[in-house]
Every structure is written in C-alpha cells, then in structure tokens.
Length: 156
Image (cartoon, rainbow, N blue to C red; front, side, top):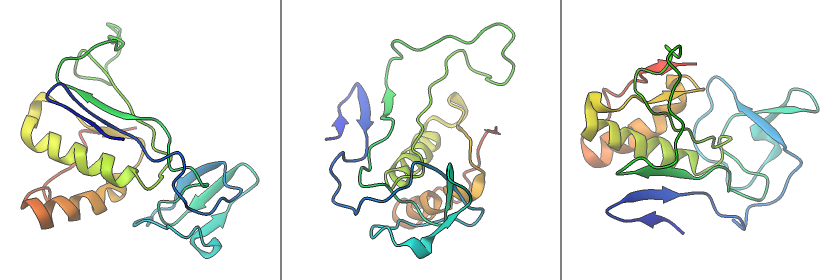
C-alpha cells in the first residue's frame, strides 16, 4: 500500500504479487535490460552461474517486494556522511535497492519527477547506468512533458 502524504512518499512492490515463482535469488540487469516481465519466462533470463542471474527485463521471484522507496519532506533517521566522504556532495544519503523488480520502474520514474522539481537541491545516483533509467525517462517525457534531459548525478 503506498504511503502518499504531505510529509512523505513511500511504496514498495507487493509481497504476494501473483507472478509465478522461480529460482532466481540474486539478479543483475543486462546492458540492454528494459521493460517488465510479468510471466517470469525463462527466455528473458540468462543464467550466468548459480549465484547471479542476468535478466533482460524487470522480474521477480514471486515476490515483487524488496527495499521500500521512502522520500520524506523532512529527513529523519538517516546517516550523516563522514567528513572524508567525497562521493556524496550533500550531507545526507538515502538509498533504495530494487533488485530490478517491477516496482523499480516506479522508483526511477518518481526520482525523475523529484529531480525535475528539486533540480540541484537533490542528487540522484545509481548502481546502474543511464540505460536502466530510459523506461522512466520515456514515461515522464510522454505523460508529463519532461524527463528527456534527465541524467544521473553520479554513477557508482
């Protein structure tokens, strides 16, 4: 259930999403991964080894939930960066790992919208490259008329 109030935006994927279960434990999107696979078809996955599965589309293992996305108006209970941490230009840091599950598309779209409105008052970073954001960029550009100029502030 989304938590949308004047104080915060919060959501996650569904615990019981109805998608078929599979044996995927740890995933990493391929270079050209896009879209959402709601059927968990094996031809959309490339098995690299027994630990990591490379996937071509956002997919889940029968549970679309991973880490919750939380964006608060006022920052609470967040770690402050150390004086030696030059990777983060702002004094606070938050993250949300989505494991490239279907709600990743909603997270990236929300962050593009937030960046559009807050501009340089927020920095958006990602473990993935710019290509993993193209679906969110397409959605915001098509439906909201902006987003086509979005780029990540820093890549890890």
